[in-house]
Picture 1 (cartoon, rainbow, N blue to C red):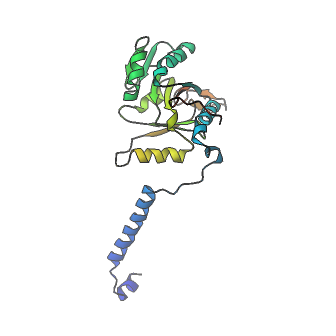
Picture 2 (cartoon, helix red, strand yellow):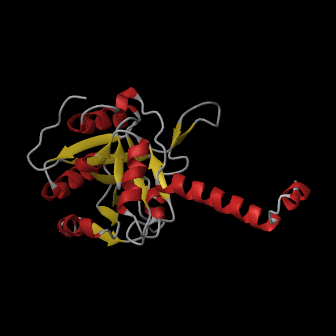
Picture 3 (cartoon, rainbow, N blue to C red):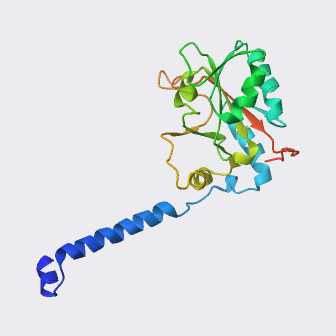
Length: 231
């Protein structure tokens, strides 16, 4: 090939460089404008029906789900869940500024600690970046305010999810992440969580809490003045 290129007066190095540049341009084009894949029919429904579909699929995955009318109703709902399940009065809360208000309210009746969990912490509270309706999954994005250890080390994880952050499929979740993080550094970890941790490696018997929380409780925060539509 080199002999043929030389006989035609082409510089092999220039040809190689042009090929690399063209390949890089194609790669960057795919990264900035990814081609969407096929979307399951279950996820191709109206936005008003996505919260109900998420609720149904999350419960099928053995998570528990509650719905509150707004951020102001979070604290009583969380306190009620902890009391009903007999989970004590201590809670490790992520440093997310969106949770400052609820953390302040909860501190009136619970022992609240913010940040990364200690081994003694049994229950944690964090927020989800998005919810994936097709499988009832949570998209949890790491940051200094959202430590990964809080998602993995506590026995009971309570996750706050705004209904306006529920999308139909995984592709839409990552599209939203790319859009909101445009020009910013990406998080170190993006976790997709479907139900509590479980494993059947030993004798094909389901064991909860194998690699993460044994209980997952999702609190959906409704958009102002909306009722949940049927899936």
